[in-house]
Length: 259
Image (cartoon, rainbow, N blue to C red):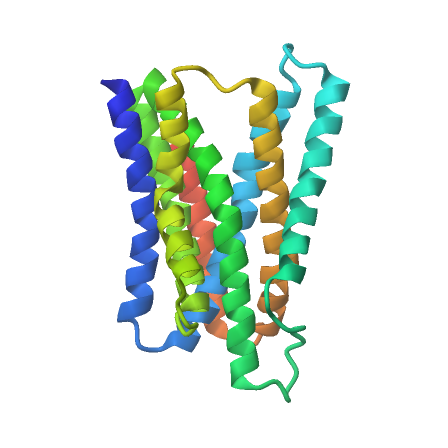
């Protein structure tokens, strides 16, 4: 029974992204929504790093089953790998150098925001697969704890859904875009299904590697993609409203995890 609930909860996690997509489609002032969602997504991603990913990595590094020096070096190496992977993706994906100058055309800005949305989507798919595994395992141990974890994870998917939908809304949709969108919605369930169908536990060293790569990717998105946008929108009060909302969401996420 708990395993079935685990699959249902992880499916619900992906559906939280739809709330963000719906908000983008229903709110008329897209610029203000972009300012707001950028501020909120930045804070939520930083919160995810500080209160979710990094503590999990530290906990795995302190596990007696793994050699501490080896595990620390392993996690550091794969965090760097996560950053490098997204940097390579940043180079490969079609986009231009985005300098936020006054001569920049509207089309150039839309190209950049679409690029950020695509990179964020790919990194989150990987992150959510890992997160889905974690929520599934938690639910198998305690259904109520799994439910709380689902709500906490889902809450930070709403602003990320707003950010992705805002950045990709005006792009020409391709089959690849729809595939990524589908993966984004189902990625947590994919992670749960891997555990469900295999019937075995993921080795801790593999979990450490996956979490570290995910951590590196989130660091790259936060510091090298969203932070420049935050600086660019520094005169927009909607961006600060987003930051405040993000802080509230992170606090709620922490409180829910402590229940």
